[in-house]
Length: 175
Image 1 (cartoon, rainbow, N blue to C red):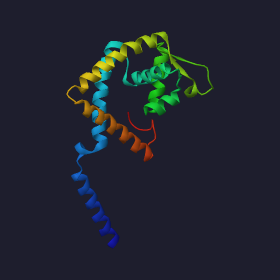
Image 2: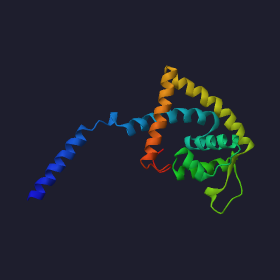
Image 3: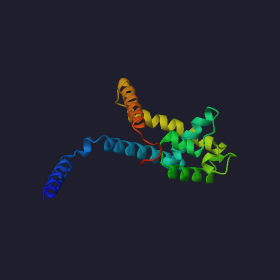
Image 4: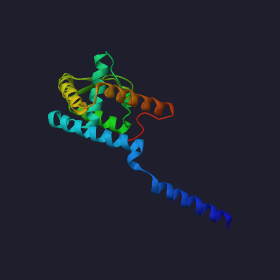
């Protein structure tokens, strides 16, 4: 009987904790809502101008940045760099390959390890998206003081580093 009463008390406390839980102040929820809204805003512009989805743009951006440094990233490398889900990266790579925006280099049998590069068409799209992205970012951050912009970037970098230190696996969570 004591076990039953203890279980009831634990259940009652858990129910009370759940009822008092403030979702609107829960950090993962706040980050997810903000990220989703910002991503949809950018995606709407990229889609209208270039026909790119959110994952396609992210993959194109990572490849473009790496290529500019003389590096040809792999799909696995894009997962690590972007934190995107493996399946989303794979679908985006397949779509960008089919559209002729990226090219796959010669590598091992595992396609995730084959180097990727922007094609001439991909470089043109990337060159068109970058100014749009910069303009939209400036518009989004309008009203933030320069020091607030710096603090926001630093806070997000610290959060990501802390999550990594606590064992977060890149590419394993929701995007």
